[in-house]
Amino acid sequence: MAESNIYLLHGEDDYAIASMVREIQSGMGDPVLLDMNTTRLDGRSNTFDQLVQAVNSLPFLAAHRLVIFNHPTSIVRHVTHQKKLFDILAKIPPSTMLIMVEDEPLLPKDKKKDPKHWLDKWAGEAGPAVTVKLLNLPVGPQLNQWIIARAKEEGGQFTPPAANALAQAIGPDPRILKTEIQKLLAYVNYARPVDPEDVQHVTTTIQRVESFALVNALRARNLQLAQKALYIELAERDPIPVFASIVAQFRNLLLARENLDRGGTPEDLARNAKLHPYVARLSMDQARTFTLNELETIYHHLIEVDELMKGGSAISPGASLELLVTQLTFQ
Image 1 (cartoon, helix red, strand yellow):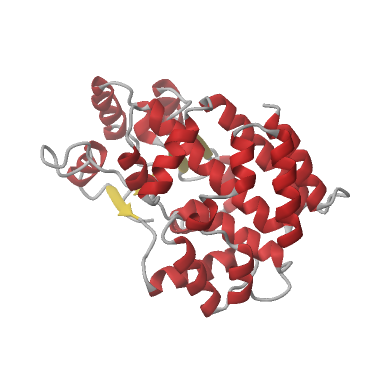
Image 2: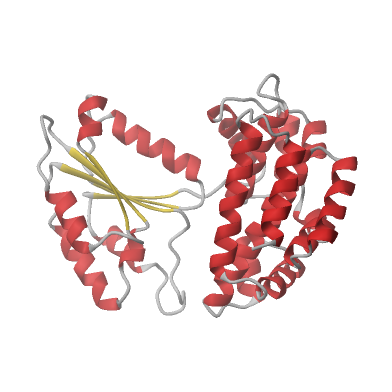
């Protein structure tokens, strides 16, 4: 086993993070026993007491136990909690492997005052017992390779030109890329590699989405206009790219609403969500007409429709979208 028994993995490349977690797990012995000795925690919902119990529990019929702690910084809700977390981490027994995972880079609030995030700084000073990895999405040709690898992980294939076309259309945005890869693989029914023409037909770029009439009608909760816009869209495009447009827009709205609730500016949203400044301003304006709870409910409906469209439901994709339009306009 590696010398480190604490890992801090952070960054936007969830594919690379998941691969590294699997690599660590593969070196920990029998997978059946490891599964019995694995605990998953989340800093957004679990407590310090639960963390202490998880990391200090003895392994069962194995040499080590594994604790995967997602969003560890979220458990720190006051500056005094930092020391509390550090004290727990300093006392983790050698029999416990702790993997802390943040799904975005750990950046300091003020780089002029402190060049490193407090948890990243602690990890760097903790010695060889802690391994830190920043795993962000690559750029340029490396992003193309990332798309190809991610498609393979999903059970499908991309041609190199198709990967380049998707990278050019979306850029290094892991959440949108993940959604678009899944949509494109579903579009070709996993039966052949995705080609550039598929990307052009299915993928909706941010610039194209910003004036999307259907989503504007949904934002206004106008059923009549939304139905009319949907019929026009379905006459011109397949249901899958239409649905992808809706997902992209409401993703922007959800991020904008969260940004508003934090007191953020359109510039903050553009920088953090990698949006065009105009799209960020538009999303912030439109998000003011929704509560965060409403947008989270809408995302629940989007997940339901996605499952219907992927799961071979007797309801056609077009009918699924009609149901979605009705649900969203009556939120």
